[in-house]
Image 1 (cartoon, rainbow, N blue to C red):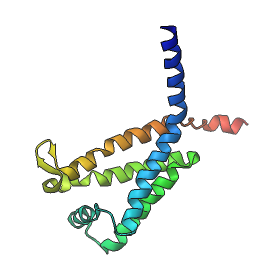
Image 2 (cartoon, rainbow, N blue to C red):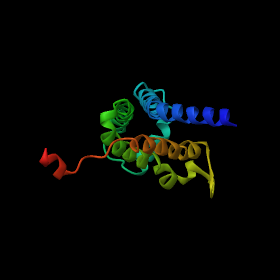
Image 3 (spheres, helix red, strand yellow):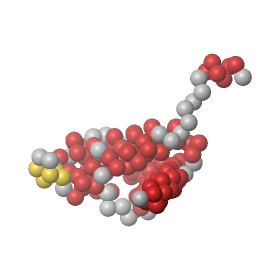
Image 4 (spheres, helix red, strand yellow):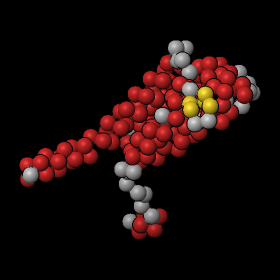
Length: 154
């Protein structure tokens, strides 16, 4: 039994050590990959984004918006690789997540088969809750800012 406790302890220590770097890399891959697919015109999410855009914002040129949205995703991915950028990337991620949840509300005919039964697109959107949880796990590992009084004393 002692051997099992020893293995358990070391396994947990190892997982704690690799969680944040692994989470950062995973978030980078997802955001940069999906963003670059949009930049290159290969994203299957394009029509959904265009429909949401037309039904909500609808102002200006969609192609410009789409490119900026794609570059925004790439930026989020890159920022997750930079530990000192965590305080910047988390709010950007939350803004992005608000927009990605839009179809659940504004395009129910695309996101839902019926109440509480998402379409494939709806499932794709709902899985973003996992991305939010992962990002919050990364954010939970950063050190708190020092109080202004502590900084002034030094």
